[in-house]
Image 1 (cartoon, rainbow, N blue to C red):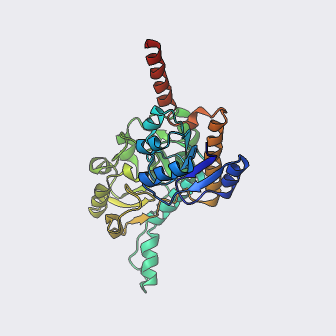
Image 2 (image 1 turned 45 degrees about the horizontal axis):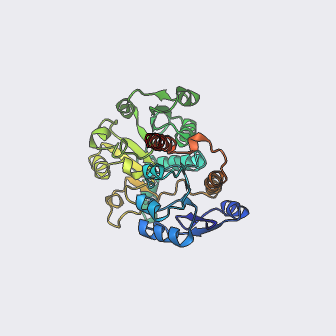
Image 3 (image 1 turned 90 degrees about the vertical axis):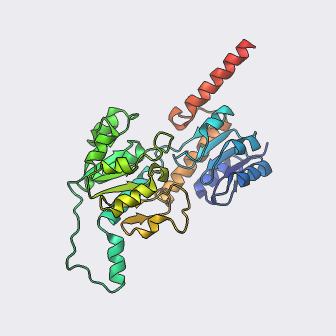
Length: 338
């Protein structure tokens, strides 16, 4: 078996690469956003035993092309680019680097919030174009407004701590988080998404993209938010119905949005967001800092070697743990019946 770890993307922090080398392995990188066929080719050519998943989709076809794969480790926490059921069906654990990039992503969420609400980009552009737009200008104070946190994981909690420093009141919704996550930050727990939306002058998205959350923010749910509110998304673009968001801003119901993610990445050159000045955009780089890159990279690689070496991995890091258990139980039942 080849002592190779495949990284689906061009970068891995030097500290993570050193950890790979210290275990006697080498890293091979795919081009950025390689498609499934290209990733499959790399896996077949290298015989890699583990994958650090960054860019590109890992579907059943990729896994079938590389039966030697023993573990997939996400460089972060969002696994919508990985078919976790297909991985479980093949006995492949999928790991996440829980909390490793929380501070960096939270900082970016706050940066998008300030840039959007304070209209930094259009004011900067106007000044550079020779306009002094102070006469008649009326800004908005953030302190005293209410921020809704959709999800209460590590990134949402870090965002909430920073938001409190700006004087924001916090409400949140997460059916899976314990009460302690809300109580520690003084976040008012909402019983329903609708209740949270109705109170959110600023809505910050921090939930995974699943079949249940895809298109969570659509025309109906956006309409439940207060007029003149804002949306911040550092999670996944697919959480938002993009045409509905544009329509809500153009109608004046939403005042703007700060977005680090798109439904399809990278976006097409004619994406409608580019024509809306009230939307501040960045290319999914909220967690791409030197500090977070080191933590996430090391966590991702360490998890791979824990699996390869037969060591114990923290249960919360194995995102498809329950699916793996269900598949193993079903296989056991079949064997008993034979």
